[in-house]
Length: 255
Image (cartoon, rainbow, N blue to C red; front, side, top):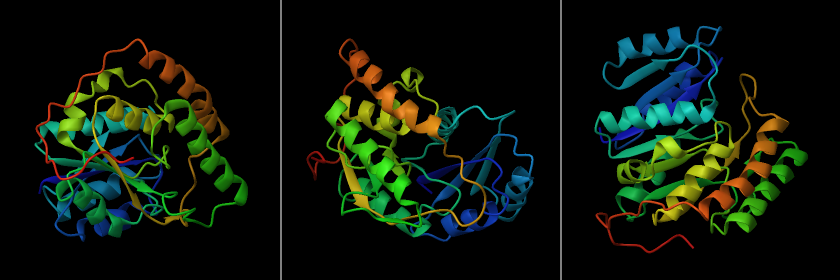
């Protein structure tokens, strides 16, 4: 397998087994890496059972406690690079991201020549199901705000359903990614673009979780709203490493 799907989990016992099996069922084939932050509900035990059933295809990193979404993904990215994956993807555990969309995200990078593909809720309107209207509006206008501050031509800047070519993660100096919460998603896209990588948004339908408890909070949106200004200011004084051009040349940027 050349593709890895990283799934952070905390108290996802209702979803863990099903999401793993749904990812493994996709073609052309995706391995799974779960990052579990010491879930007290037994999530890790469910993942370990899946590891026994699917040896080599399901993997687990267990951490001592809740250390933040961003640090989970950074640890997963490093693991994926060390194990030779060409396409490294991130998604939620609660089926808000449909595993059936994984092949399209991979194809945008593997077949169309983009460096980053984003499962976008807003590229073809507002494709969100079962969210309260207040949360839909907050998310939509937060992305608009981020576009205004950063200049990124990405409509769903906070999206957490993303595929990266390994060159992107090797280039962008992961040690310098500062955000740990959901603003991490903004910083990753912003940094990739500053490094000269090409981003494509792939339309998806985002469905609010049915099982388990949401990890969202007002603090998450506050981090995104206020942190993005400091991120933009820091970028004026930082020299970003650039893509070396060793990539497919079938598409231009995602604007």
